[in-house]
Image (cartoon, rainbow, N blue to C red; front, side):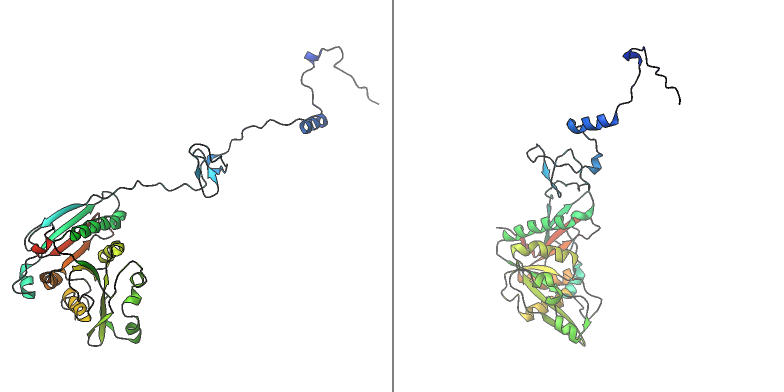
Length: 311
């Protein structure tokens, strides 16, 4: 049997050094004594803490109320300040000479209608210095200014959206069934537009195209501007005539808008031919320009000079 030597005998407690605590005693004490709550440091990206909604600056998130000092799991998208586009206006009294709006070929106008009617324009332009993602907003701002200008003209006019489909297609049963409005769901199901004409079939041998008009109410104006800007087979016509929905008038507009309509490649509105045909009747045409890669949107009101005079 070995001899156990107590080497602490005769030594003061201060000299004994660290003493191994009793683990059972420590566990018992920890159960009986409440522990003080200590702040826990968490990475900001992993925080899911919830704060009192009365806390200044608190806002509602997707998973609860979070304070401004607590980061979300998903970084919120920056909110861009809303800015009203600045729209400039330019008057061009003669479109057959160099001007700030658009230039028409006088000789070609003479070949379409002799003598060529005088044509003028009022242009509304808005530009952006950043990405061209604001083009729809810029075009709508120009359209609003143009609509206000037309409302102030000496004689009242109603806006009509002229709509035509794409190139000539063979008159199959499917094409004859769908016609025009079934391919324009946004217009056929829209509750903000006014009267809508019948779909007028324009024949060219075995091929066919369709055209029609929709009354442009104030609620439809933004959509109409977007359609004319992106679909070059469409136009907005302000007119005081009462025959706008007549099939004969729609076919006349079509024949003018697509000069040389037998050419299957012709799907863009011929603005000169359309202006020469309709403007002498007192109509005002609205043309929109500005595509996805542009940084400028413009709206041109085309008419004879006397029909652009305001009250």
